[in-house]
Length: 247
Image (cartoon, rainbow, N blue to C red; front, side, top):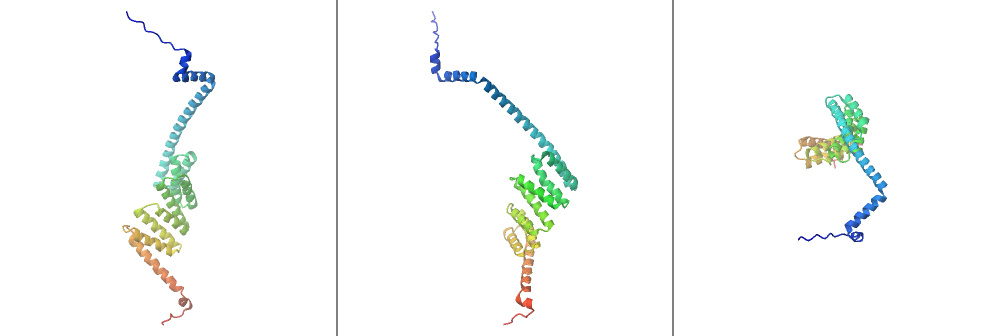
């Protein structure tokens, strides 16, 4: 005859000795005592999650709309219609300035303003872009080139040269050589011939495969001759008209 299984019953005192049971009992007591707070906290968490989901959805929707306007504006710019492109960039910045497309819009708006020779406005747009975008070196270099071009158009050659020279340190190869050549051109226009010669020398020495290396050599020699002629014209003998001492 099978023996009956003996049921083991734990007293409450024994249950309290079990860590898991003790935790469960304490959790139940805590829940009863703070039921209202727990319910409110749960509601807050749910509402927060709903708000986050809505924000992410709205952000994605705004980015999609901004990208559409940016594409349309760029199409106008690249087809030669800079004034209409500027109108669209302004719309983009008014409605979606905080999006990634809105940030890029500042850069391309600068390009459009440069096309219409609104030079100060172009510089301002480029500078706003540089303030807002800190990590994209490719686009930042493009903005700096835009500023340098605008300054050169305004006749502020020395400032344009400094910017071009700075960009040359951020790029490599023939691209760096191009920036050095542009900087040297601006220094030459600013009558800073010594500095221009230094940059031409840098191109010749460090960029031997650059397609314009011969142009750099010719420009460098021209400036050296110019400096020599200038020195001769300002020498004491030339200034007084006296013949040089043959002794």
